[in-house]
Image (cartoon, rainbow, N blue to C red):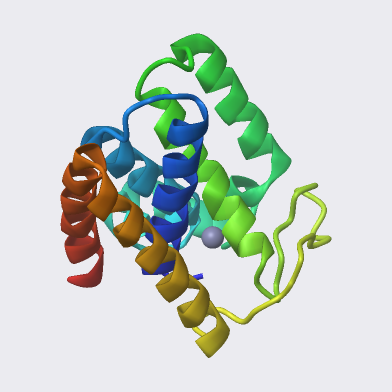
Amino acid sequence: MMAVSHVVIGSALWWGVAQATGQPAEPAALGLAALGSLLPDIDHPKSWAGRRMALVSIPLAALIGHRGVTHSLLAVAALALFLGLAGTGNLAAPLAVGYLSHLLADSMTLSGIPLAWPSKQAYGLRLLRTGSLAEIALIGALGAGLAAAGAETGDLARAGKAFKEVLKVVESR
Ligand SMILES: [Zn+2]
């Protein structure tokens, strides 16, 4: 999926989790969910995260390739360990939710994700092609839903502003 799609899906998923668990939709948490949603593609040197952390992304891409270990159950287990150590009542939670949203989103694309890495077997719903009209329509609908929800509460209006700032950064790359 495209970086913007990951940001929208990560933010929407965190917003849902925050609502369900009675937490305010803090702008900082929403920003972290957006960041988390971009992290798995650190295995691609040209991705948003990969360009910022070339010291990690270049060797990772050379050794493992794109959509490898960072898109697998191993990464989910590492994330669970990280959450176990950091606790869920803090900013680690939106980061983790963002990360998971990326795997969920990529699993909707035709290439799927290698959940059982190092096995190359790909898993997923395989509903749409990256960059396709279907992806753009889905992201447009989700983005509009988030914006509508944001108009209703003051918290979300602030969060929406922070979210727009993140989008601006992503789109300028
Ligand atoms: Zn990915």
